[in-house]
Image 1 (cartoon, rainbow, N blue to C red):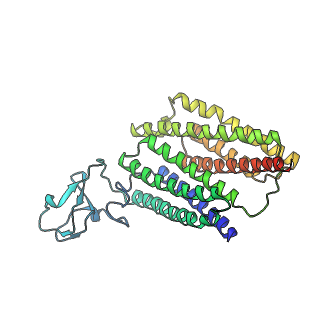
Image 2 (image 1 turned 60 degrees about the vertical axis):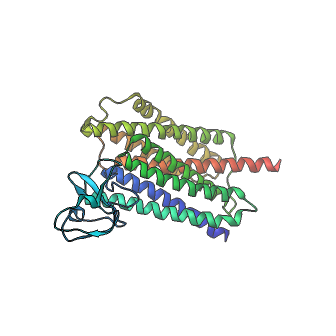
Image 3 (image 1 turned 135 degrees about the vertical axis):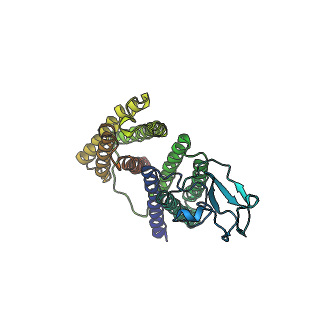
Length: 343
C-alpha cells in the first residue's frame, strides 16, 4: 500500500509539472485570455470552436450563463430562453469583470486544455490527500503536507480566476508561478518522506553547503526571472516588437543575467564533488545538463530576439531544476540526519 502511495505521489508531481508546461504553452501562444471567464469558457464547459456560437441569432436556445459577443463586449444570459426575431437586451446582463471580448478558437482551446490539465492535477492531489490518511499515526507530516497541497491547488485555481479577471496582471502571474513551485516542493517532500527504499547517499559538509546555497540562489533567480518576464509583458502590451523588448531593460534583467553564471558554477561543483567522492547523488548529472539548457535558452532570448519556444523552455526548465535542487537538498539533509542518529 505504501509503495502505491509513493507511486501515486510521483504521478501527482508529474501532473503538476504538466500544468506548468501547459501554462508555458499558454504564455508562448498568447492564449491567456482565450477563455475570458472562469471556470467555464464563454459560459460553456466545453468551449466553442466557431465564432458563430458566440453571436446572437434568432430562434436559438441559450442556457443561463452562456456568453455572446455583442457590440465589442460580452453579454451573459440571465436564464434559459429562446431568442425571438430581435435581440432582447433585458434577457442579458453585461459581463463586468473586464472588457476583453475577443474570440480566437486556437487561443481558446489552448487555454481550455491548460485548465483541463489543472483540473486533473487537482483531482489527483485530492485523492493523494485521502490516501495519505494511512500515514496519520506514524508520519503525520505526510498527511498534513498532502492536504496542504490540496489547499495550494485550490489557491492556484482561485488565483487563476483573478489572473483572468485582471486581464493577465503581471504581479498575479508571478504569484501563480511561485505558488506552483511551493506545490512542487511539498510534493517532493511527500515523495521523499514516503519513499519505502533506503537511499544510498553519503553526507559531505561541502556538498550540503553548496546545495543549500544553490537552492536559495536559484529561487532568487526565479523571482528575478519573473520580474524580467513582467517587464517583457509590459513591452508587449505597448506594442513593441520582440527585437526591442530588451533594448532598454530594467536593472533586474542585468542582475538576473549576471547571476546566472553562479548557479551554473555551483552545479558544476556539485557534479564534480559528487563524482570524485562517490556520494551517490545521481541527480547531479541531469541537474548540470538542465542548467546548461537554461543558460543557452536565456542567451538565445537575449541575443537572438526570443526564438520560438525559448520562453516556455526557459520557464519549464527552471521549474524542473528547482525540483531537482530541492530533492538533492532533501537527500543531503537526510544523509546528515542519519549520521547524527548513529552518534
